[in-house]
Length: 168
Image (cartoon, rainbow, N blue to C red):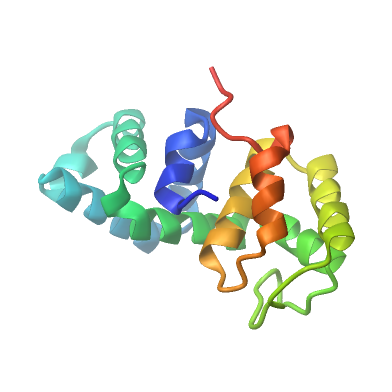
């Protein structure tokens, strides 16, 4: 199971850039908070990052977000992207598991999930969404929630379709 900063380290640069670009366009305060965390970690002033061309800034931010000291910033960024941009995927997963939710957001998760139900839900996601986005979501889901299902961890470790880092 990967932590948020590790997800940024293993996901493709294209997906990391898509996440940053989405947050840039849809959540200015969240984007600025991420930039501020990156600037602090790099020991530069925020204005230094703000003045960089966006392509260069995003490359710098992706590298920084893959470091352990920025796990909280990476987690906040992933959470915002998942809840806002990937809500349909979250809803499909939770509906397949018959877990009550509000637009993909859950108050209380069961402590465990039945294998057949979990595998069926994962198959639904893999059939409908890009495998890399599904892998990021499921890793984040298992890392960020208190439930931490062992069978999901096993799926993430053994199913080749859910492996990150297979990009060129």
